[in-house]
Image (cartoon, rainbow, N blue to C red; front, side):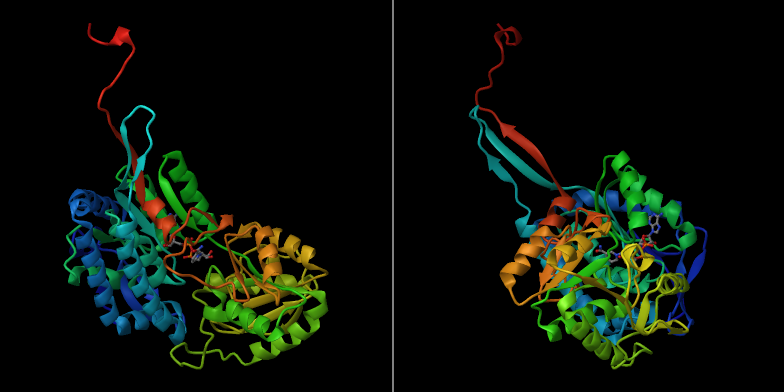
Length: 489
Ligand code: NAD
């Protein structure tokens, strides 16, 4: 990692932002500046979109096998850049070393799955009552804007742009200002090295000061036909409303308040492990993090004791150290949100069983009991290493507590009775449910999406296919017939 200036990538060329401005990226572990990055403005964004638009017809016209080759080539190059991605993931967003390695491997599957998707981009032959040959042709939408978050920046940027490109679209990617290198710049280098035609992949980076204007351009510019957004519910709703008004396609992957439900017949060891991983992996900064632990009253005491004991073992510190699974919180704003919610719960009578304190950017893994459903810690996304335990008197109450959230992304059910688990899963208002596992799970071919305030549409598998393509009804008629008035006599 260098502190040299990082540029944006438009039409196959590296360039400074038009006004020559840059912004600093800080390492959350020690506050040091790790990069100065181009702070793009609206005119840079327009140029990137124009380049994408110019490149799109030729890219879409390539045999799909050639696009497949490019995607595999990018994957091979990304693989050779494993050290650079890992370094950026640890230094930019405080990823624990193990999480960074996992993300680097998972992203390769994103490219391979995207390449495979080109073979599934098929149309249909429809029946016709009028003897026509009636077809549904599938086409790329055109230019896609991809806006990604900082928490899994490598994976979540690729999840947007790789399938979009595979299906014949061109893209402008805007990674988070917290993670411009791991979420964008390294991908631009890989695309350049792969010899991707200029304009197919473009990269815009900008600071929080410019993001409202740049974001507006990425949504409202008439060139843009689809917006792939992963981030907070607040920003996602703004983008959804703006895009909806312009009748543009969106896939919106937003926040969560995911719950693990521990039923009375649960294997408690399994429940403890799933809740610990789900709540504390990447300091709880995953959209699918377990943010509510709902436990049946008959097993609550045993679960709580064993959970707290397990959480005690988690080491906090420099994420480069393999045994320090809990790294820093990404920035001051996030840290303040965590502190505020925990303090609010305490003043309302909640008990902190472990944690509840921080040293600099390191918030200690925290378990809270005696919480009520109206507390901020239960209602709002926390995005930190905090696990509140809610006791349910029976399964029906556990389901009701689960569904009382405005969010509905992922969930988990721990039970010895899989049939019962499936019955409970069917009653949850949520996009994803994992029985006897944690709330955190993802595979690139699976449609990943939330309901309620957790999103609309989604990425992965058929969801990406539908998001990044559109259909056109085409018919061929042998003998057209019209009412006699309209036909030549
Ligand atoms: P964020 O909404 O603050 O930022 C996300 C992206 O949007 C960033 O690139 C940011 O620069 C950009 N952005 C901010 N304001 C914008 C605007 N006005 N117009 C256009 N773009 C704008 O979210 P974040 O803090 O980066 O990420 C954390 C959030 O993302 C959490 O809520 C988390 O749950 C959610 N998330 C969801 C998923 C999912 O798949 N559902 C995955 C990861 C993260």
